[in-house]
Image 1 (cartoon, rainbow, N blue to C red):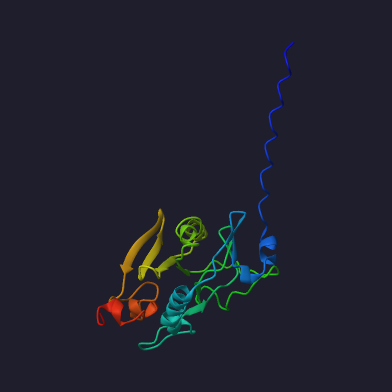
Image 2 (image 1 turned 180 degrees about the vertical axis):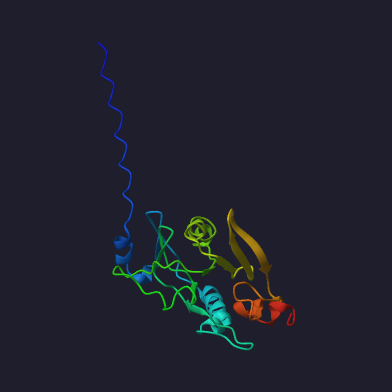
Length: 210
């Protein structure tokens, strides 16, 4: 007598995509992002990450005014870590900016508490927990939504990478490191000493104290 074959195991149901509302309900200190329906947690930023983020913000801050004049730039709304929905993902860019000629007023959160106005500029500071997303899914989402200028700052290698949007994708227009002073679009009205974006880790690193 033949024994009955056991029934094949029932495959698990696919996880339901997380909604924007569920993402926003996560406490901010947990540093969660929503990448294509999946929650991704960032590690708490260390001093190098914070210094690089603040360094970018300080260097481009002169643009955060209604208009320039003479040698003074202007014409941007600039902020940090704004809760946003961009290209279908929920994110908090390290530094973000909108052109004032496209937005008469600074973009405000909607009823859910997120800003949906597509920024003209995004800067992300790379870390071990975020680099794959900043250079992958988030980069794709920024491109698809129309973000024109995308900067990547790497505190480990102390580099600034500037990308511009083209019809086929982002192209790298500048890579700079310590010792370089650059004028990087869209903020090329100010000269940025790239080394100033990062923590000064002592004279030994520069070979002046062995």
